[in-house]
Length: 316
Image (cartoon, rainbow, N blue to C red; front, side, top):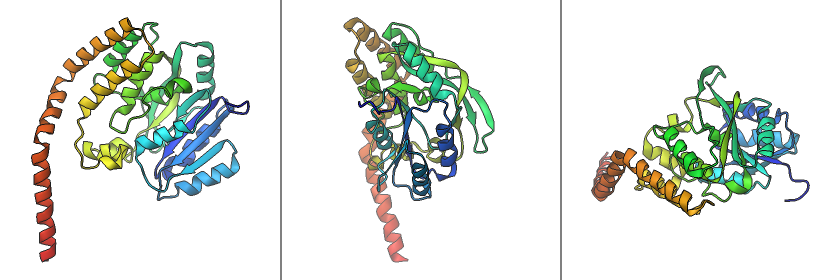
């Protein structure tokens, strides 16, 4: 890291985000903490995203704009902006979210003063497409125990029935984040990443609502309601392929525990926690195995049906 490197890198992966992009960029550039760079990675957008980004980059030297001609999926793009970052702290930012001017300043102050904290995030307000408040979301990720296995257990209790994963859009220590598996190209990989981060350090929640998460019809979850569509959104190369989601999560958690810089006793406690996780997810794990068993028959049926459709079109 050179002496001119900013203290914070903000990574914005984007694909066809022109509708809300200007508002997101403006909220980041209005931060009271100014020592940052903004890395924008455009995943082959076909709307006005490129024009907007280039115009902003021409006006502000802190913006670094990169464009990939082919859409390689959300997972790839999230990791791309992280790879391009070399600052002490890192933050992911979505093209449709907004944040208060004080967000970076307050997060930097917490990380500077608390070496044990790996991730600092503010409270979240959900807004709609018109920037109207929908709800004050309860993240409740203030995981401050000095014992990693206790933080890991608390984390699992919080996300057991699903979670918005908003803390992932807080400020994170870059060197630690780069030692993890990073963002996976599969659904809920953000939750798994949070689970690995909590093994590396404490989470600190700022008790102020400084993050505004936009919920609108074109979000990934709403636009890709079918799970198979969501898998392809993360990684287009996986479209139409078998994906055992719960088993993927399980194996990734085990790998995270093995990779984490904690002692043997702590790792043992974390592995025991994964046995509880298996019990909580037993139905879904069983469904994944059933899906794997019938997958060859399902593929034969789909291929047969596709051939019939093509034959009908040929006849007409």
